[in-house]
Image (cartoon, rainbow, N blue to C red):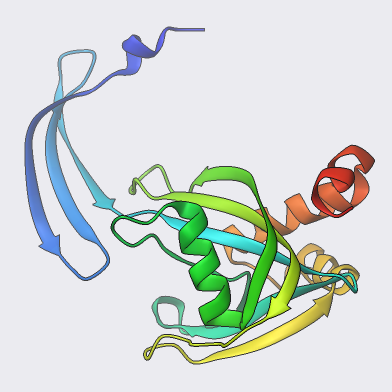
Length: 191
């Protein structure tokens, strides 16, 4: 296997072509390892966090919401972008309360996900939340959400049937399936 240095591209020039509330888009001129020049277009993202909110009665708390870019209502795990100065754990505690009206008594990191390395630097932090307690829900002004608590078997069946297509949710649900089926992992997360 080749060393990472073999693949490294050198930035010659970087130009920001769009600046928005959430995303910034760049077009860079780069020098490839073979000496050729090309351009790379990509999105800079502040990062985000997603959570698997596990209720004691073997249910998962999910949110239904309309997603404008694809023009469809999606069933998703709660998630949100990391605000400046926030840690991923602080972000997901805030988002869990805002979106679902639950606080996590137990919050454990599961994994980190680069969501789309071909055109974005977004890093998504996946957490497990247990010992959930109701709290004040305070959704963002620009969000219309329905909170849905579903049995884990139902959620996994929806995932396996292709009814859930959101990538972060799919990854979270595959982790849920792994945790529920692996006694060592289950001990760490649920018991």
